[in-house]
Length: 106
Image (tube, rainbow, N blue to C red; front, side):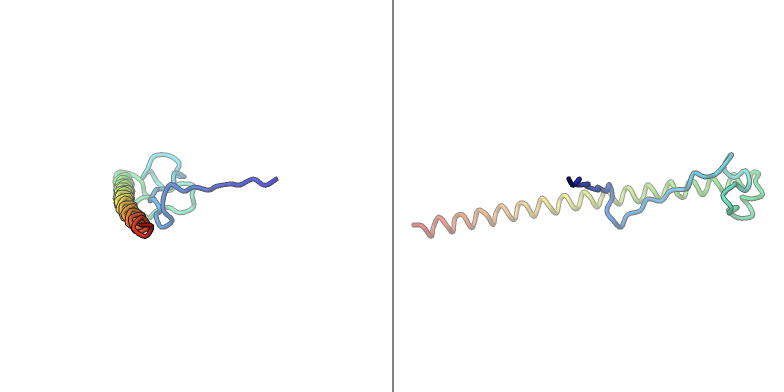
């Protein structure tokens, strides 16, 4: 017996959402984490500048993700409008063909 699996994606193939990895241990900007990379000398040093840099980075990714979601939403709206227009045109073509066939039989 075969099992059919359907894989569905929530987003089109070209869209990748920006996000920060949540592998940091401790407070953001408090110094180097366990991940191997320190994130730069300012973040490694910790303190107020490290926290400020971490906050800016979080803000950047938050804005980037918001922009991507807005773009995705707009693309979906435009795609729906396009398909509604296509449906309308196809229905009109069907009607023309039905009229043509009705006139052929007379």
